[in-house]
Image 1 (cartoon, rainbow, N blue to C red):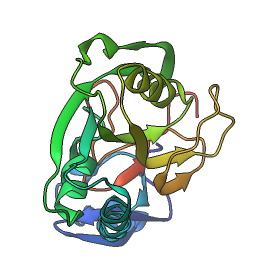
Image 2: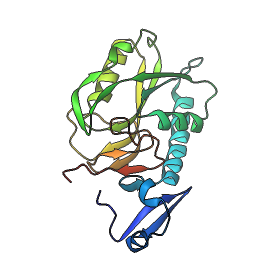
Image 3: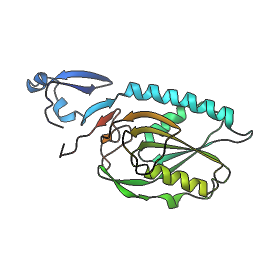
Image 4: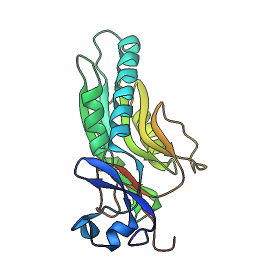
Length: 216
């Protein structure tokens, strides 16, 4: 990202997102904003994230009320750490009497690129036999992580495996797969915030932001 930004830029001031002109920054206005401004432009605001998660919660609740066998409860499996905030907010938005919650930490990224190998699948135990599982993940990029998880859960005897993904990149996936529920489709750009990170940085940002790499 070019700094300071030229023209008008959308920035976070407290709990509000405001348009700031570069001339205000150059004149020293807004105090320490130069030092504290999050990286990249806002792609999806906090308000849009909240609204979409609420919609997903309603849709997913309706599905499991209609299709879950009597006496069964769904198992929601959150993929850590990227889906941390999305998973937590989705659980709050879901209106079901009983949901079992589990998490799994897997990784296929090194820096801004998918490494092409998936680490963490061995942590899956044998408690999925006959279960109705919902995988909740942050982003569908190459398709490697989601496809491997779905395949492994079925191998472990899951009766049904559904997927809910926050973001899907508009690109040809290396492994063809389509999520059952999707938050947003985005361009093939590297994004951070709301759980998504760059080597551990920017995960706690309240919005989804496009992070420009040094060669962009």
